[in-house]
Length: 418
Image 1 (cartoon, rainbow, N blue to C red):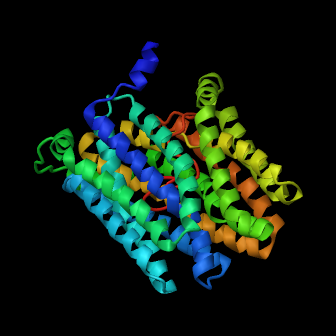
Image 2: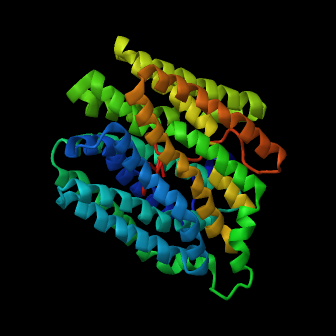
Image 3: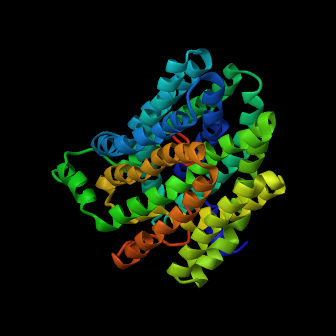
């Protein structure tokens, strides 16, 4: 085994705890949230744009509330806030298993975004503090997201057709297991932050983050990418529903699994490309890959195989254009401000709100306009990402950090992909 391989897969006990928790989180997320639009279509009378608004609203709440949650993390304890968010997820999923009224379903789904505002900044701060300094733990977190995206949709598709009770209680159990795991390591995880003492600079953390040009450029580029990225979990399945009717759940689950498997398989090639290609052609390759993916999705009624050709290009674009925003924050923020910085970086998830709403409206208005718009809009991220490189940002252009389809909200809120 080479030194680089040994380095990548050797973890401290705290790192193992956080990585295992990330995997549980990812599996729970991908078992439910990718099917949220289908669940709303089956259980409510909402129009396609309103379904997109609800699904995107999870990410909107998480994005807007992220800065508030991150500031709380810096003032309190990361583990304490993370644990509260995990407990909230358990309760919300249990309630979703029991309620049947459309209003309550919508309210509870939106509450998942509020839970994310507690979980994500705390989790990412602990990941950053546990890391040895090179950001490798965020690369491993990407792998856990891919694994979750392989296991979660397969389990979710089966549970979806069994009962609402099973569909929501299994993810609730996974979140409960994550909470239990974190609490068993509470002493060690709290020690990562050290003793909490009054910090006269803490009140200026938000202003410092808001003035960080590299951070704001990363948020803007991420929002553009996430707007496009959100389509595969929110609007594409609704397009598939028209074409494939009752087969949609299984075909969609297989699509997400292919995405995750390909994301893992492509990692060596993506890493090689990120080292060999300059930033501009690498970003352009990612944009072109997304555009081709939308073209193949559009043409998929001609032959089902085109749907899976599209996911190959989608995965390539995803791996290139999600360039480690969390690693950038990890490098930019001092320890006492990491929660605030990670919280502000959640604003890029506004793309996951605007994306489903705009996508749902465009799909209802004109199918060809939808695919043309999304295929071209992704190219707007190119100037933003190039300005990050000239603004002194430390993001590694071709190294992906977030998971497939996820979006995610992350597993805790949107999709996502975490």
